[in-house]
Length: 303
Image 1 (cartoon, rainbow, N blue to C red):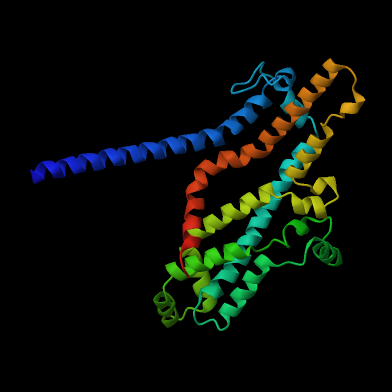
Image 2 (image 1 turned 90 degrees about the horizontal axis):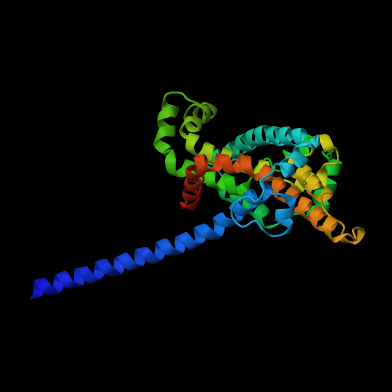
């Protein structure tokens, strides 16, 4: 009798587990649809005709496929410059970010560094409080960084959050005994950092490169505030200008058919701009998402 009751309880438990897993999968499916459909819609609308976009005929697949939106975007001469500039900002800016972050994280990870808690507190303070936009603009002006490439690199040379992530990784990965062994062999602090710490920090350095690279690619606010020269502007600003130029003034058009056509062209241009700006990072992200997850896990460790 006891054996029969035990088997019945196990069967009930298995059924409960199956129902719970089914509910989880259903919830994840709903979330996937909610996140995936807007992306599919934007891509489909960017390849559809202006009339189909203006008439709301696009739901999932392109209607009357055309490349008119992309032709309008890439006919702009600023697009090439807009693509090259973020590549420069990404390469140089990420290199500077990586150097500054590791140079700040390593001493903060050393227990014998006197005053490291005070320095860490000062760093963290800057995450919550800043001088504001106007003082920052005046500072860039006094430093003669306005309308230069350096204004998009120097002010964001280091992220405190990424310093904390790197410091936590070094504390939990590189043991003190390794430094003692290197010191006995006559290795200096600089030599230990260059020959031991950096080679062992490749995983966290990959995470930092991804974090900083995505930031530089998507950054637009500092460029909009500090840059005036068109040849220095990144892709996001260039595409924003194209999008603004494609807007329709409703009061200037009296013909309904012409108005619908212009609205369709404007919307088509908007969707094409979104795809052009998003595709590079969307193509890279599936291959590097595991590094993002690892970076989050490293930062969640107590250190």
